[in-house]
Length: 170
Length: 170
Image (cartoon, rainbow over all chains, first blue to last red; front, side, top):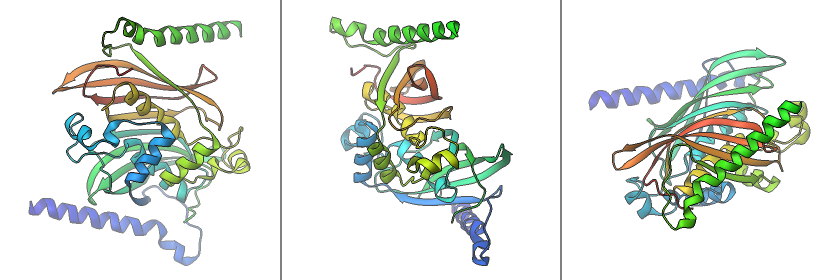
């Protein structure tokens, strides 16, 4: 258990270090360009109201999102009502577009490894793994991950995007 | 062009026929169980208000969804503002859960082939391709597709779900 804890701490420190990296040159006042290896992040806690509003706009009224007893006994979610997986996954285009406005999604793979419950803090993390010029734009691939409790991987996948410029907007 | 049109018409007729199939025994009053080959569908037209509400709940404020000129000139979307790809893709868990309440998402792949513009009619179509018992539940795989203009494939992919029962709820 000590080793597991040490790995978790190191994992958190690694993430903290890479979080600082992409923005370190902003202080120098120069435009920062996206590079392979850069990590972009966003934290979010989905409330009951978020789940209801998402359900209203998408039409997804699966009772696993609304009925604690149903979620536990029928679907087997020990913690009760779960956040829509695709709402959690919406953090990926959101975090990409907040740093790279105009990004267009080409593809996304998603594996939902563990449920996210209402009120869980979710850290979405995307890392650029591949980058090449594509006509007058850029094709960028990212690994896409969501964690709860800082280091529990709950959603994993990959995204491919076409972005108009490599300049990071924040 | 005649051949293309014929293929489109045949494609539409095939979809219409398979749409009728899953529910044919409901009239006999017996519970209908999901089978490999069954197709489930839902049509939806996303409005400006839907895009705004989705943006509010997910935090995705990419200007390609709000600014016609930006969407055209910077991102290259000829039709202007586009619907969030993940909002279009949310139709897949929505249509699955509306027929199979309690379905839990295991994975989803998504390829965004063409943009969906505000006001486009979108037909989401999922087809069961694989089914096996999994503990006291069922693992079901689906192909997942969205079309506009009846037969233009705009989003394609596959979903894997765990469902508590094969009984179709409608």
